[in-house]
Length: 91
Length: 262
Image 1 (cartoon, rainbow over the protein chains, first blue to last red):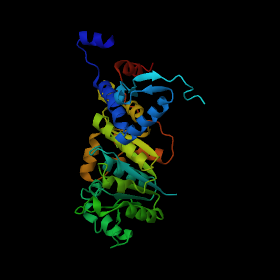
Image 2: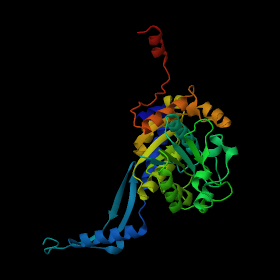
Image 3: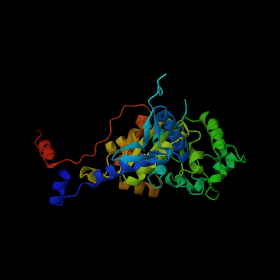
Image 4: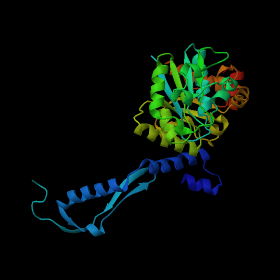
């Protein structure tokens, strides 16, 4: 809202604030320094846990880090082929 | 108890050497016995900032390679007799000295000095690793500029990986008017982004240039704002609770109030 008003009146956001916001985003990226190897290990462990409960389609699985404004999320898209109706992981 | 500080920044040109010279002289003015070790081999400048460039006989590399004992390479300051410089070589490169040699040298220096300040080269390569090896405390110098803050963040990460946990921040070359108008990151912004303990904010001050021209660090000049900021930092290093300077420009209303003493 404020931004829209500022645009109408042709007033720019103070550049100090712009710098602050840009830095916050870039540092989130810089600080996450996960090697492909660690990512692969994490993926395998996640698969192991989920497979106890459901059958998943390993080939269609996608996992990545995404950033959303000022935080980073681990986003996984794991297609489920069917539920396991036996005892599953409940032991 | 002696303490070893490394002054580092990642980015070049933010004022590492100026900070080293001023804090070193400031500590010496307070009666401490101080040695400044320049590890910016090949690009030495600490000697110039202290006005000692004509007195150098031996350098850090002569010491680490065992040609002379460190005492022979030390240059005593002209005015402050408990301030010493261990200059580095201007002709060798950063590979001429390694972390183990610096650690060994600093252990010897600890016996004699209260404060050992190591001026670190820019970058995150070998020279940086050598400079930080012996440090108890790291002072990260940054500027209210997007690239300097990003590089400071990187350096903080590298320090963490090297198990250096005691890290302090100095924000250098602040322009109060620009902060006031919202066109410059302020100390709180930078604190918030880097989440480090800030031990000083130094205003951009023309006297830093003129005092560097003369080889006399501005910490000794009573009329210099930056000098006052450095004296405050020295006090904080000595454990004194000194409030931060405020640079707020006086508004018209505040000025009127003051004039009419309301």
